Image (cartoon, rainbow, N blue to C red; front, top):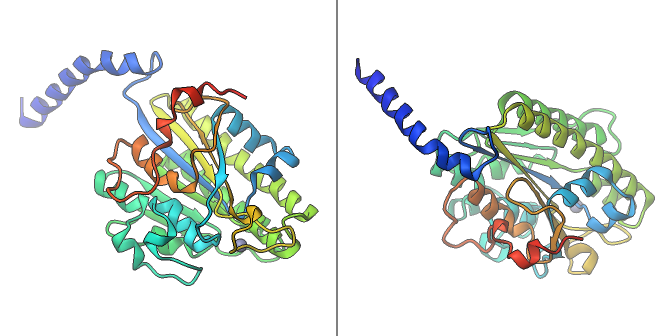
Length: 317
Ligand SMILES: [Zn+2]
């Protein structure tokens, strides 16, 4: 018996010894669980518009998980500052990004969730897929950064960004189905595009909500199919937005339409149908780290949404 065989026997013994404990905390038949987390970032999406248009996939996700609706005031309601907060867990006053003209420097002091996960466990597969090319500056920042960083090239003849978001969705479905990244961030743009072009109160905005909901549905279907075929994988989906839109279109100020924010958390650790106003986009990174068993960042502003108090967990709508 060589050293390798000795080791593998030792691992086998350890696995046999540990299995009953793991099995007791997980569904019967499942092996030691592997956490998988997908964050869907939907630029410019307001949750009350999801309700107004009865977007089926987003409504189903929130019914199957935890829904938090709140305000991000006084945080700056612009994509750069907000996606930086989603991906670091600290507010704008810490990372210092004030608009969409930023570089990778702030992420040296406040590393992204990609960097934090890769430092915690270098073998983790992390990936970013975004329609907005500036996301690549965040996902590609730091040492180590995300393993795979995709900025979807703009698709020609795409007047409402639906085709380019569709290409981002295709890439996400492929990644989930074939490679099952441990952490995947997907960022889609067309709702924000409709808000700027037609206003938050427009029919065009509502139409964009329905189109992006269909893309969310495709990603969720890929995750659920993957999870069914691989019972050891414990998939969690988190959904959030970066800001809202004024009725006439635009954002960056502090009106309730611009600061409105929501988070959906759907997965084995979140009670179905629970609602709260406790969590916002700043809690995404702490939640992702917690789901992977990684320690929280020392200076994080957000907290893990897994810590939802039992009383709120019982508040089924
Ligand atoms: Zn915008």
